[in-house]
Length: 209
Ligand code: GRF
Image (cartoon, rainbow, N blue to C red; front, side):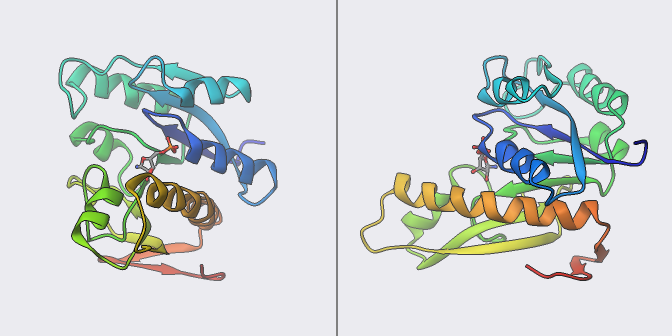
């Protein structure tokens, strides 16, 4: 079918959120297909998980920077995503900030999952930031990607209570479980074109979270 909604997933790690999206598609909960999985880390579990599901998976060398892609690498990511004719890019643990090229090529069509209730605790190890700060409730956020760090319009959030005896690992695990619930719901709404954006506000038509 030509009009199937096509998703490209970018990740640098184990890829459990990719797995949750793929499971939700297989269960008929997201009217879409994952067209390609790309990683900046050759040994990333997300690539192995994708290949195990017969989904096209490719390592693209990121270049010399630590926290972003160099220009050639960003062009290579754009080319791979355009070749795969993706309608949406879902970042799932992709550890590099996206700059001009990809953002321009896929404006308004890139989403990310972040392990805190944004705008609190953007950046790295957000669950640990939340624990150290002493908040009683944290969670996860799915948001559109803009040029900032974890700063684009918020699509959906789920909360996770912080326990008095929590460890960073325990809290991270519970947030991860919430992510696997939230991300497929948000991507399903995007695939169904039930999401519109007015300034910073993201409006859900039909089923709310
Ligand atoms: C998740 O915690 C996500 O919020 C963050 O990176 C992690 C990726 O985990 N952006 P996984 O690779 O999907 O298991």
